[in-house]
Image 1 (cartoon, helix red, strand yellow):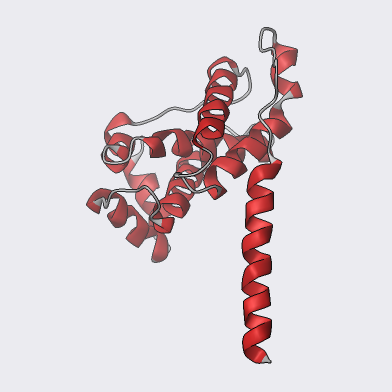
Image 2: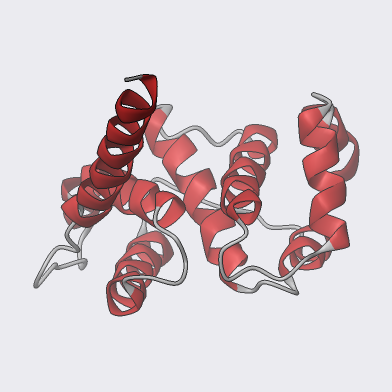
Length: 169
């Protein structure tokens, strides 16, 4: 009986993941021309970031391209969210897995939107790293990366925020 319950629970979790992964739809015919246009899509951007983070990199490839395009078009014109990257730090942690750079910016953006357009660079870095750590740990379509694993170790020890404070100027 316990085995049956376990099998049913695993099935429900997997089914729930599959359906939730498909719930986000990239807006069709979106318009990003004036300041007011960007505010209309903020909830879609948060949903997009969640979808990008939670959906394995090796499925829904066309949808991922469309979601990344929507996200980048929104971010590059956004009057409310600004990301200041230290290229040495972020590139070092994403050079083996370039798709993680987009996810880093996505995590930072989600943080900013969920926190009254926060401009806190330290927390933006933390949330960006947290997002790529979540994707990296899944190990799907990811190459092993010592530099990122060092960041993960700091995160696991609760030392990442302090490391960011000392290394991001």
